Image 1 (cartoon, rainbow, N blue to C red):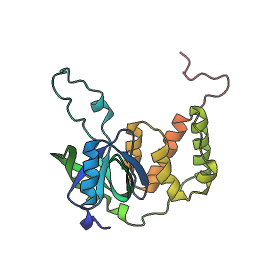
Image 2 (image 1 turned 30 degrees about the horizontal axis):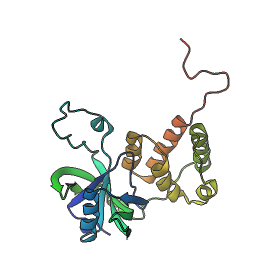
Image 3 (image 1 turned 180 degrees about the vertical axis):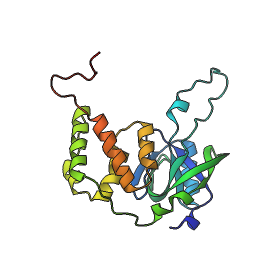
Image 4 (image 1 turned 90 degrees about the vertical axis):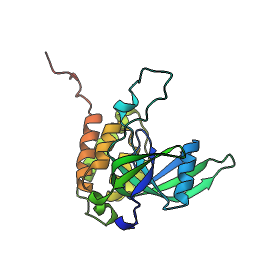
Length: 224
């Protein structure tokens, strides 16, 4: 795929606390009528869907008028185009699909609703490197694994450590930002990292901060 293959307009799938990264796979359960329409339209065309996060602050807003339909939540500026690589239709008309992350994009402007789902003009020219082999990641892998173990222990999460240990460096930097339950803004920061090495630095910082455990006998708060 090249930038020339990317359509100037994409159907959007806004999904909270979820990002799709280039070269990552994302399974989706499609059951809402508007997103069933989105998948069907994508399959009839480029097979591409624009994954993007709603902004948390916009989702929490109240328009104060129960008689008026709630406004569509504002979206982050950066998303990722995903190509449908597999699709299973269930007997009830819903779909199980898998997206492969292709290239990030900047949302230029929304162009309205089509069959219930949002569409937007996009520009991926700033992210052409997503479509190339790119750089070899260079980061302190043992330190990151240690921070991940601390993070999981702190939050009571289980993990398939044998699988994680077998991932190559790039796969680890693609998988962890998607599966770790970071808040939306932190996931967005990982998505918007300029390079794999930038993402590694951001991920290390987030794991260190979220998995921090105060030393025995110490307080989480500085003395007054």
